[in-house]
Length: 55
Image (tube, rainbow, N blue to C red; front, side):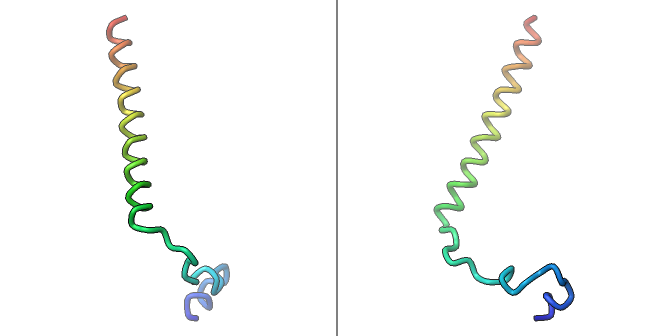
């Protein structure tokens, strides 16, 4: 394989198909979880800012 010849740190296993690729639902769930966590983080920052302004 040309890539493994050019990059000795790579092996054929690096290009093997995953035995169980993630489903579309799993990918969507992961993306939604990431967005919810980002929103929670932003809300905490916003609440902290409001508290600091009130002091």
